[in-house]
Image (cartoon, rainbow, N blue to C red; front, side, top):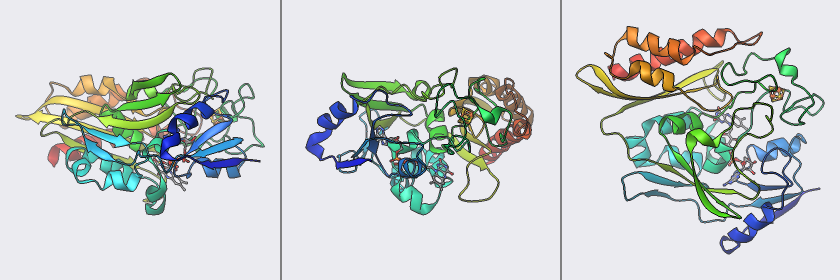
Length: 333
Ligand SMILES: Cc1cc2nc3c(=O)[nH]c(=O)nc-3n(C[C@H](O)[C@H](O)[C@H](O)COP(=O)(O)OP(=O)(O)OC[C@H]3O[C@@H](n4cnc5c(N)ncnc54)[C@H](O)[C@@H]3O)c2cc1C
Ligand code: SF4
């Protein structure tokens, strides 16, 4: 039995206080905020998420995209994915973000999905979504059948002996490459989290996916000022051309002067247990000529620590080719 409650703008603090009574902000939370519902309601129908209270935050005034005084952008947590992807400044200055969102889900889902909800979308691992199966993420200590089972789509970077689930978000891969920050309001006040610190590796607590504590509400995501003249691309490889999650993807933000790469920010999707920023690829690119050999070296560096499972060895070469192709394409543009 679930209780649904609409949260009025004046009741934001009360909602945070109510949610802070939850034992956890993670899997198994008694109280959940409701954004677009495209993850949460799905999982409640499957009995994977069973909150006793659902706080509908759609009326909170967190639906603006605003320029910041330093030239960046502040995005409200309730901004719909479609509105963010189609915003003129985002398309112009942060095109990798617009491209990543538009390659995710379907138009209808993007119209509902919010920025805050996208940050917290759950893995598509089939065992996680089936309560008849064991799953350490859903029920800590119950086991991980994916390690010896169906793991074709699962992670090759950042996995542990307890969980090998992939983070499925496209938007988050672009946010990692753009060095976004996440603003959170909680019972102890506001705090800001660097995007690279927001999602956690599974380790031996795969049920804990982010640094959020009980009651913490994502209020905004902020992008730093754009790098002038940077070239940006999001390339997503998947089993079919639409309405499908990434097998491998690459978000690329490159600065090039006189044929040399002067700055690189690289993140990978579909292969990591979290949106996967690759400092190794960035080092391999920076200061080097923008040519095929450099791109291949960056891809080798990015996947050096990859550990395949029984069904997904192909992802190593796929992710390398994805990154090389993205770098080649963006350089030629
Ligand atoms: C069929 C299908 C295909 C999809 N394909 C893709 C794809 O290709 N690529 C991709 O990236 N995504 C894909 N998605 C996932 C989709 O992007 C997410 O479901 C969506 O972004 C979640 O946003 P939401 O607002 O609906 O979240 P909700 O379902 O409302 O919430 C998700 C979680 O976030 C929490 N939450 C929401 N807002 C806040 C907040 N402000 N503060 C704290 N907690 C909050 C909720 O409590 C819940 O736990 C797909 C989804 C479906 C159903
Ligand atoms: S990979 Fe993670 S989500 Fe999938 S079954 Fe194992 S523990 Fe559960």
